Structure formats: C-alpha cells, structure tokens
Length: 341
Ligand SMILES: [Zn+2]
Image (cartoon, rainbow, N blue to C red):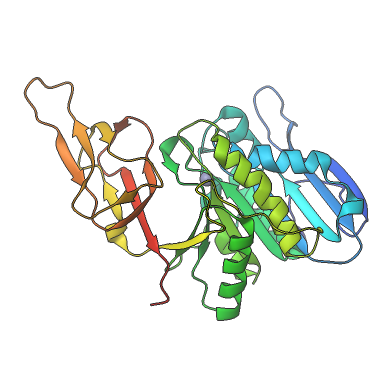
C-alpha cells in the first residue's frame, strides 16, 4: 500500500534539519522532447530549533503574481538565526502554469486548486496536489496560500478563510488574519467542494488562511506591499520571528475589517455575452439595486446596453476581469461586515 500512495515527486529536503535548505523538487513529466524529463519546483525550508511550522505557498494559479513575489523574496533572504521554528516556502507551486501565465496548468488543463487531495498516479496537477497534501502538510501547523483574482477579475486586497466549525480554530484563524493585516478579511460561510488546498489543510486540522491581493492580470502594487508585510506579520504572530505586527492601513485605520460573503445574492452574473462596463472599483461601498455595470452589445447598431445590478449592500470585493464577458461570468461579489449569525 505504501508504495501505491508514495509521491512520484523527488526531493532531498530533511524537514528536521536546522538551517536553510533550498532546492528544486523534481516532478516527472514525459513529453515529446524529453521522455524522461522532469519539471523543477523551487522549495526553501528554513528551520531553527523547535517551534511552529508555517507553510507559505504562491503560484497555485499561474497568473497571480503578488504571492510569488513576496514568498520568493522571503525564501531568498530569511536568515535561520532570526527565526524560532520552521518556514516552508513554495513561491511557484504550479510552475507550468506560472511559466505560461495561466490559471490552469498547460500540462493537463486542470485547475490545481480543484485537484486536492490529489493522486500520485493521476494527471500532473493531481500529482502536485497529492505531494502537497501527503508530503508537506503533515509537517505544517499554519498554512498561508497566497492568491489574487488572476485574469478573471480584480479583488480588494484581503485575506480569506472558511467559517470553520471549531470555535477555537475560528478565533485563532481570525486572529491570524488580523495579524496578516490586509484591509479586509473575508469569512466564508459554508464549505467548498473539498478539492481546494484550503479544504485539504482543514481536513488535517491545520490553521488555513488564503489571500486575494489583486488581479486583472497585472501586479497590484498595494497587494505586493500587503503580502510582503503579511507573511512577516504571520511569522511574528506565531512567535517564529521577533517584533510587533504592523497592520496600519492606507486609509489611516489601524487594522483589518472582518467581512463575510453572506449568501448567493452577493454575486452578480453577466446575463449574456458582451462588453462589461463596471461602475465601481473594488473596495468601494455599493448598494442593492444600484448598477454594478452595463453590458454593451457594440456589435449591434440599435441594441441598448443591459444594466446589471447589485443585490446586496456592502463593499465590492471582486469585480469583473476581462472587458469581454460570457453569460454566467461573475462580474461582482459584494462583502459585508462579519456577523456571528
Ligand atoms: Zn488563485
């Protein structure tokens, strides 16, 4: 049985060893030009003595840049002498997608964040997911997985988390989010379908935090700043690094506003294919009934644009990405202040 579940991804990191270890994991990928070829995935482990283990991941989706910038920078510079505990850093997990600048992997056309818990003998993305779940996660106490809205949208810089059932874990996760120090932290009611990294992390009872630090297919300057500061804040919050967490916000407020996406009414969808003109930037206050945007049919001479409205009061968390949208695309997600029922 053991050999059947063993990962095909090879690495030589000794997770118990003190100091800095940096290497490329070797994931086999047979292709026309290299039958015995591998794909190299960067990993850095920095450990000093005993203490919690924090996992920092970026590039699970290949077109999200702020996390990989922040995590690779920390991976290059973190001195083991300055920490107590262990930090596992994988700045570009889904490297084929990162190199292709795509959300989905060009190898198997899969969204890696829908492949957990993965399969060592499955497709490339399933093999990667299985490695994270079965080899990395057993070492981990806290997981911070950095995302943005990618090409498909823009997001107000934020952390996010599930409304986990265990009240103690819920509080610890919200405290960790506040320590990360993004302007917003979005708590999701309900659970996802179980195929995300977040779900895999939660199944193991590990504290899980995600981020959305921008989008629109470009690097968000503020998103990078918040990401850089946030991962160091997490190390401070969990006692791996000395110093006070810094959570000051550009608007002068001192910390993170806890939010929620209440229900399905928080989402607005494109009613057809067209060119979508949004009415607000992410982070702006919006009201139910107001226009979220207008769907233009520039190919028709006489057709009036269709108005798409918000269905909840709140703050715009996510907005549409590409100007051209298809029927059913999400064009707005509204968040509101967190309430405990
Ligand atoms: Zn993502």
